[in-house]
Length: 237
Image (cartoon, rainbow, N blue to C red; front, side, top):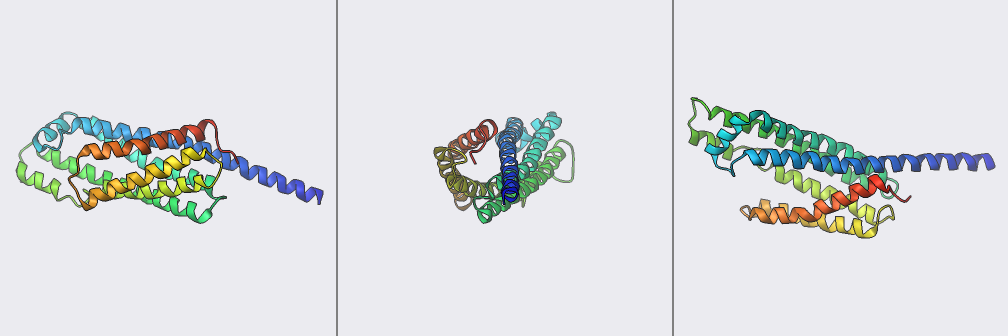
């Protein structure tokens, strides 16, 4: 009996050590995903000219390499999201396996939809490049092709999947003492708020961009704080 108890203790300790390792990896990936996504968005947005086709086409042609780098950073962010989701799943699996798996599927779907959005962005890039020289289409026709692009709503849909998975992960954290309750509670609130903003964007498009920017601040605070906590302090099993 003593040997069996000692063996069980070793197994439990090993599982907890693995859980802590995955939690720290998730903390690091929280920060890396944000860094890649924000850097890619800043680069592409700085080159685009606020949606005006002509200036945007000229800027992209002049900075094509930098624009491609921005898109690739967004792609790396989507790939890193899968690692983040796995780290959070392993961390929270002992608490509620079903909810953790559900959140994992939502975050993985987010990454897949984000990758599809990058594919669409590269296709739009080719349209902008065609506008720089004589072609079968004039500028108005090329502008219409971009407006009718079938992947235009991919970012919105990816954000909805992200918000849903994030809400579930933070809710499972809220059921534990792994991280401070105020942090996990804030994460639930911020994720639900972000989800509502993007849903409204699909139902009633045309809302001011400032609404999305302000709505992004709470979830940004939640993810940065959680990432730093998991990376530095770890979880309290």
